[in-house]
Amino acid sequence: MKMIVKRLRRLEDGFCPPVETESDRQLLVRIEAARRRLTESDVQDGRVRNAGDRERVDISGLSVEQILHRARVRLATE
Image 1 (cartoon, one colour):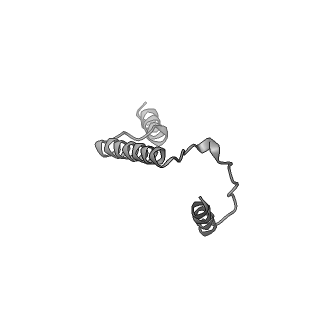
Image 2: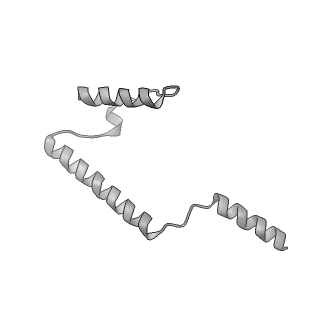
Image 3: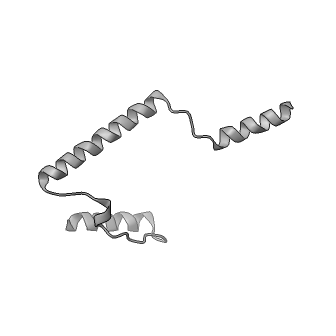
């Protein structure tokens, strides 16, 4: 019986989400605040950020360097 309990505990530890800590909650609050500020800034500047406005680009098979270069080019043209 102890063996089964140990195996179940190992499975639960492997598949269950990690316990949320206080620092995790603080980080989520900071991320949400940053997103809010970014949205407010965009609205004030007359820009609207919407993920549905942009078409998805297939980046599979590209290196990290190529992906970053494409992002820089895209941001420079906006």
